[in-house]
Amino acid sequence: MSDTLDQLKLHCLECNKCRLAETRTNVVFGVGVENAEVMFIGEGPGENEDLQGEPFVGRGGQLLDKMLNAVDLDRHKNIYIANMVKCRPPKNRDPLPDEQEQCITWLRNQVKIIRPKIIVCLGRVAATRLIKKDMKITKEHGVFFEKNGVIMMATLHPAALLRNPNNKPGAFEDFQKLRDKIKEVCTHTYD
Ligand code: URA
Image 1 (tube, rainbow, N blue to C red):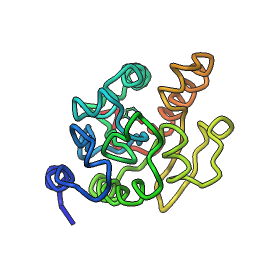
Image 2: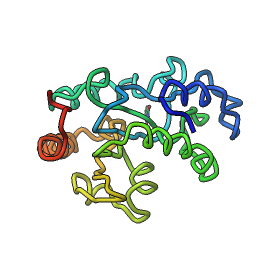
Image 3: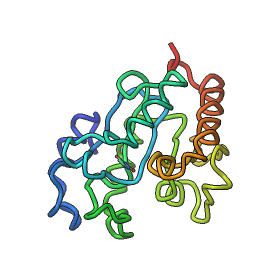
Image 4: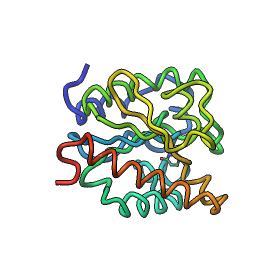
């Protein structure tokens, strides 16, 4: 087990545990600060992320950054962003169960090092795997759960908001609830 994110990342960049390694351009390990109290977890890299090696850098990422910034969160200052799978699934299909199983060890180790107080799942894939199997995002977004001492919440995936802008106000409310929760339980996110 690596002690730092940099060490873990070096191992992860060499990963060949599943077929996604064969088609990736870059491993998309994650971005953010090591002492983040809030962690966001998406599904998997798309085309732009695969090319640049960073999560959420396409149109969805721009929307995510806007919503983050609206509640004083910033990927380079006070949070960490990762994905369920670190390599792009071809044609942006959902990651297959065995790919998620192989890859989740990297995420578990990221969580062990960062020790976030709050995890926000971006979309169904992360929410059903990390919060509960039968999670219904459309109904249960913005609801806080607790698992193993970590507060968890899901919100709509930014790509889903781009497809369906009517849902943006609801997602924005999730971020406001998140801001209140951060103020309640975090010590340095809003320093
Ligand atoms: N969608 C995701 O779930 N993650 C990314 O990094 C980009 C798009």
